[in-house]
Amino acid sequence: MTDQPRHRSTEAFFGRRKGKPLRALQATHLETVLPVLRLDLAAPAPLDISTLFRHPADRVRLEIGFGGGEHLIHRAVESPATGFIGVEPFVNSMAKLVGHIEERGAENIRLHDDDATQVLDWLPEASIDQIDLLYPDPWPKRKHWKRRFVSAVNLDRFAHVLKPGGTFCFASDIDSYVNWTLVHCRDHAAFEWTAENASDWLTPYPGWPSTRYEAKARREGRKSAYLTFRRI
Image (tube, rainbow, N blue to C red; front, side, top):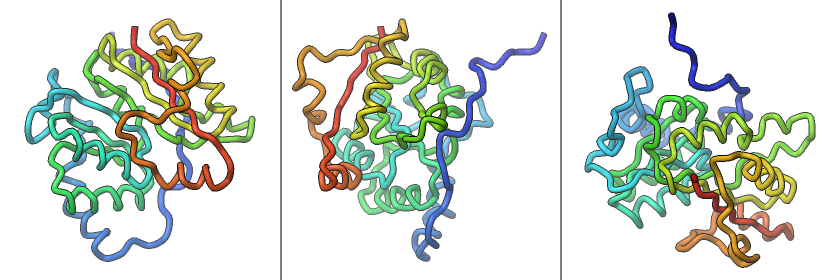
């Protein structure tokens, strides 16, 4: 009897893979640094994923779709005892983060440059302390909503890899996606929303570094929501 996949298959949740041509140094970083930091999903995941990092980590966080990497590198430098797994399929964004890692000398980051569901299906059960999904593509057209990363299938994936008491943090400036996420997490038995009053979800997370996406939203008059869900 063959092993069955842990989860149902899903569509790709991202759009284009590459933008403008990379600068020479960025291309070099992708050729030399990324292979060292890239997760080897062809091999079984270690039972203790803290060993993925140069120095065993006290906690492990997964950031899905890190964009330019401003938040991820900030958190990694701020919390050197925490291990960070960053996932981003967009080549130019990955090149920016790898450059930041080289500049800052961060040794607590591992990377994956393809679909985040591949990492979620590779990780051991109850191995992650926190998942960050920050300003994900909202796929605003109704016909594309099925491509939003927050879904019943992906919340199953989150529930599998998060430790009991672990957190799923979601930030967005798109009201329809905020409501979408609240409804999906409300309907999932493994998650509870931690907010007790409006300030809990209107206030950025502690130590939050403003990102370029957030700055753009403010310029265009959109407010952001910062949702935190606990793995029950």
